[in-house]
Image 1 (cartoon, rainbow, N blue to C red):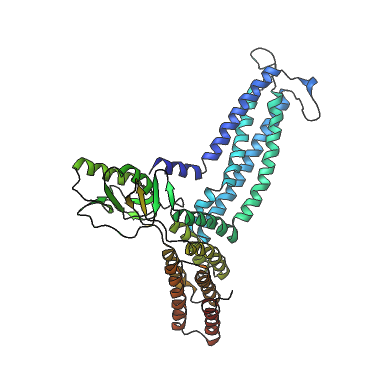
Image 2 (tube, helix red, strand yellow; image 1 turned 180 degrees about the horizontal axis):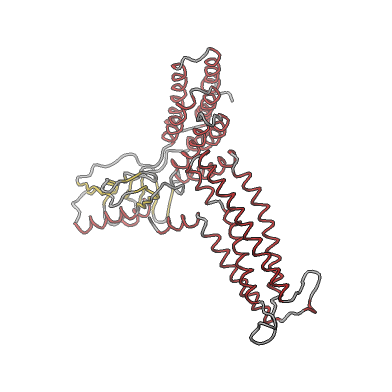
Length: 441
C-alpha cells in the first residue's frame, strides 16, 4: 500500500485526532505550569473568575476532574462500541468504517483523554511545604483554573456526543453521509482536462501496435488506488502506450495480468523492466476495499443498506426507499455527464489508457442487486421504477438511459413471473406507465 493510502487509513482511525489532542494536552500542562512559575500568582490575586486554592485543594480539584472524565470516557465509548456492533449487524459491516472515521467521535475521545492526562501532569507539579524539596509550597493556579475550563468543555462535548450518536444511527443520516462521498467520487470519475502536465480525455479508438508486453502483479489484495496520470508522467518519454486492465476495488491474485505495454518498436530489456515496475508501483494494494477512490464500493454500501432492510428478520421496505432516493441523486448525476475520460495524454501523445466506471455499469449494479429482493414488496418495485424513470427523464447519456429503461422492463417481467394478485400487478403496471412511459413524477 502506498504511503498516502496508509496516511488516509491513519487519518480515519481512532488514533490520529486523539493523538493530536493528547500531545496538545501535554504541551498545555507544561506551558501553563511554567507560566505559573514565572508569574508567581498567589491568594491575593483571586478574582471572581480566577480562584486560588492550597495544595490539597488543587490536588482535590485535579483528581476529581481526572477520575470523572475517565469514567465518562469509558461510558461514552462503551456506547460507541455498542452502536458500531448494532450498525454492523443491522446495516452491514462495511458501514462500520464510517463510524470509525467520524470526526465527531474522534474529537470526543481526544477531548476526554487529553483532559485526563492534562490533570495528571498538572497534579504532579503541585507541592506542599511539607513534601517539597525546597520547603516551599507551589500551586500552579493558572493551570488549575484552566482545568475547570477543560471540565466545562468535557460537559459540552458529552452533550454533543449523546446527540451525535442518537442522530448518527438513523438510516437517513447514514445514507446521506455515504451519498455525499458517492457524489464526490462520481464527479471525480468524470473529470476531464489538465492534471499537472497531463490531460485526461475520452478516446475509444486504439491503434494497432506490433509489439505488446503483459504486466502482472507481484502481490495479492484489493486495488486501493491506481494513478494513471502519475504513470503517464513516468512513461511519457518511452514512446509506448500502457493499457491498464484493473480499477480501484478489483481483487488481484499474485501473477494476475494488470496491464499491457504496447510499442511500435521492440523495447530494450532495461526499459521494459522499468516500465513494468512503474505500472506495478502505481497500483496500490490493500487488505480490503476502501471508499477513497472506489465508487463501486461506496455505491455498494448504500445498496447493502437497502438490501439488508428487506431481509425477513428486518422487513423494513422504507429503508430501501431511503436508499433508492440517495442512489437516484447519484445515478442521475452520472447519467447527465459525458462518458468518463479513459486516456491520459502527455506532450500531445496518448500514454496511458485506463478503465473508468461508466454510468451504465453503476445502473446495472444497483438494479441487479435490488431486483430479486424487491419482488415480494410492491412498494419497493415502485421505488425502483421511479428511480429508473428519473434516470430516463433527466439523463443525457444514451447508454445509461437505455439501461435504465431495460431494467424497468425486466422488473415488470420478473414480477409477472411471480404470478402476483391482480391488485398488486395493477399497482406495478400503473407505476411503470406513469414513471417510464409518461415520465410523470
